[in-house]
Image (tube, rainbow, N blue to C red; front, side, top):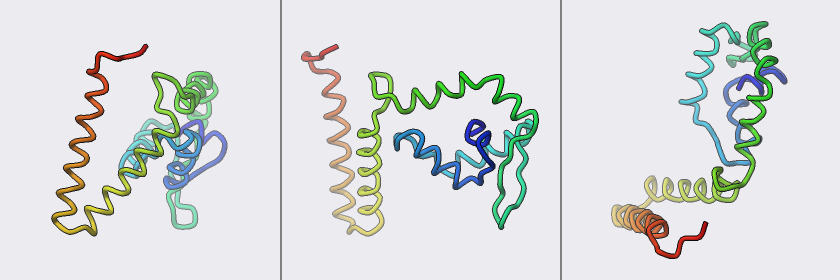
Amino acid sequence: MLLLLADNPRHGYQLIQDIEERSSGTWTPSPGSVYPVLQQLEDEGLITLEPVEGRKTATLTADGQSYVDDHRAELDSSWKEATTAGPETISRDMGQSIKGLMLAWRQVMQTGTPEQRVQANDLLYKTRKALYGILSSDDQTS
């Protein structure tokens, strides 16, 4: 967040969108994770939160800018890790697949019949077992 705020002030929703965009869709933080972090950064004196057009907007303080300047390489590497497809990183396609799965599951849970909800949960259970089955197979490649 500090790296994004070094570019320009943002409110929480803008930070959520920018993080999703910069991570190529692999990570979309929830408001429940963004706003406590903003409060902590304000408590630490790295940002100020001020109302702008009805929204609390975060701006780096001088200490916050100094922190970003002193740790830019470390902060930049976080974005590289989030956007580089590799064995240690969730690829963009996988992130989109999980996101689509969660949206479909949520839709069934909100609008489906009790029987459809049971079917959806059973399918997720079987899928989870199948994924673990992939890991336990003798056919692993390195």
